[in-house]
Amino acid sequence: MSRMEAEYIALCGDDAIDQDQMSVRALSMEHGAKAMDEGNALVCESAGASELFAMMAWMILSSILMTRLNSLASWLR
Image (cartoon, rainbow, N blue to C red; front, side):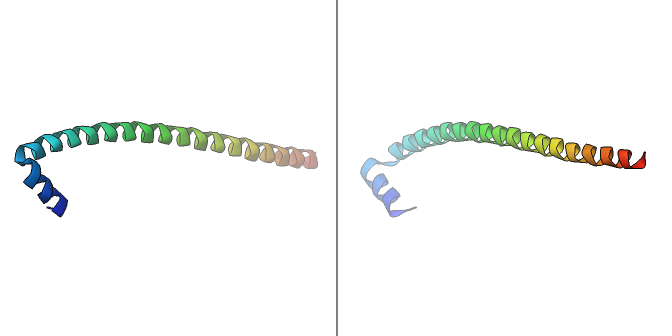
């Protein structure tokens, strides 16, 4: 127990600590849920961005590949 907690118990008593701990836990759970929602939204956004990047990279690579295949086909004729 920290010094501040000991002082608080001395001033307010054990009952106040229990009520405060419950309210702190409730706030922590609320903030944790909010942070989790924000984190999930961020993960979804980054997944969307990475999928978009992968799709763009695939389109560029496939266009390069098609160009090379066309030049190879014309060379073989």
